[in-house]
Amino acid sequence: MDFNDTPEEAAFRTEAKTWLTAQAPTEAELSGLSDMARAKLWQQRKAQAGWACIRWPKAFGGRDANPIEQVILNQEEAKLNTPNTGVFSIGQGMAAPTMMTWATQSQKQQYLPKLASGEHIWCQLFSEPAGGSDLAALRTKAVRDGDEWVINGQKIWTSGAQYSDYGILVVRTDPDVPKHQGLSYFFLDMKSPGIDIKPIKQISGASGFNEVYFTDVRIPDAQRLGEVGQGWQVALTTLMNERASIGGGSGAAGFDQIMQLAQRLNINDKPAIEDGQVRANLANWYVRQAGLKFTGYRSMTALSRGEIPGPENSIGKLVGAPLTQDLASFAIDLMDQAGILWSPESDALEHLFQSTYMSIPGLRIAGGTDEIMANIIAERVLGLPQDVRVDKGIAFSDVPTGN
Ligand SMILES: Cc1cc2nc3c(=O)[nH]c(=O)nc-3n(C[C@H](O)[C@H](O)[C@H](O)COP(=O)(O)OP(=O)(O)OC[C@H]3O[C@@H](n4cnc5c(N)ncnc54)[C@H](O)[C@@H]3O)c2cc1C
Image: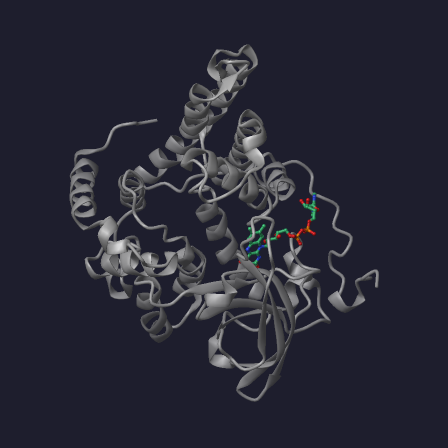
C-alpha cells in the first residue's frame, strides 16, 4: 500500500486545489438559492472549466482523467463547503456509464454533455413491488408496436423521479423465457404522456423517492440499449456502477463528529468522554472506521497502479452503513431528551446526527441490502455454495407468484 502521491498526482492535486479554492461559490452567491439551484450553479461552473465528470472523454464533457485523479479531486473538494451535487449522482454515476457502454455514438454526443453539466437530471426506474433484491423478477411489460414500445406497469422507490428529465428503465419484453432472459433496457423522457409520479413520504418528512406508474407509455425503439432480451446484461453495467457510487455515504455523520459530541455533552454532570462505556464504544468505532479507511486506501492504491479494485466496494457498504447507524443511534441517546426534538433550528452537529439517524437505514437497503451484499461476498469473493434459486431455468410465466 502506498500512501503518498506520485509527483504527477501531487501536481494534479495542486492544480485541482487551486481551481476549487478560487471557484467554489461564495455564501453571497448562494444566498437565497434552493438546494437544486445551488447544485446546478456549481455543476455548470465545474463543467465550463473542465472539472466535471473528469474521467469521461473530453468529447462528452469530461477531461480524460484517470481514476486516481478523480479520487484526488473528490478529496480536495470534500475539504471545502461546496454545494451538494447528489441530485446528479444517478445520472452521472449510473446512467452515463451505461450509455457510455451501450448507446450509439450520436446518443452519447446528444446526452452525455448535458449530464456532465447538470442541465439534465436522470433517474433509475428499476425496482418494483415484486422486483427489488430479485430485480430480474420485475413485471412491468413492454410490447412492440412498429418502431415503438408500449409500456404498462409500476416502478417504486424511484429517487428523484419528480424532478428528473430522463430515466433508465428495465422492463419485461418476453415472459415465456427464464426471468433474466426476457428483459430489455430503455431510456426515456420523463415527461412522456402516460407517466404518473406519486411521491412517497418518508419518516424525515422528505419525499426523496416515488412510485411511478406507466399507462401505455410509448418509447421509440431507438432508445433501447442492447438487444431485445439483453436487458439484464445492460442492467449489470448500471448496478456495478451503482455500488461504487453509493459506497461513500456522503453527508452522513462520522467518527470525528461523534468524538466532538462526546466531548461536548455531559453524563451525570461530567463530560461524556470521561465515561468508561462511552470510551469503549469510541475505541471500537475507531477501529472499525480505521479498517474501512485502510480498505479504501487499498482500493486507491490499486487505482493508482491502473488496476481494478476487488471486492472493497461491497465490504465498504456492508461495514460502513451499520457503523454510521451505530454512531447516530448512540448520539441520539447521548443527547438525551433533546435527541428527539428534531428541528432544522437545532444545533448543527446535533441536527447532523438526527438527519443521519433518519436516513441511514435507507443506505443499508439502497443499491443492494446488507443480506444481498453478504451473499455477493460469500458467492463471488469467498466462492461459497450459491443461494437456493427455485426459479432457475423456468419460464417467467410459469413461476408461481403466490397471488
Ligand atoms: C434510499 C433508497 C433509494 C432508492 N432509490 C432507488 C432508485 O432510484 N431506483 C430504483 O430502482 N430503486 C431504488 N431503491 C430501491 C432499492 O434498490 C430496493 O429497495 C432494494 O433493492 C431492496 O429491494 P426491496 O425493497 O424490494 O426489498 P426485498 O427485495 O423485498 O427484500 C426484503 C428483505 O429480504 C431480504 N432478502 C431478499 N432477498 C434475499 C436473499 N436472496 N438472501 C437473503 N436475504 C434476502 C433483503 O435483504 C431485505 O431484508 C431505493 C431504495 C432506498 C432505500
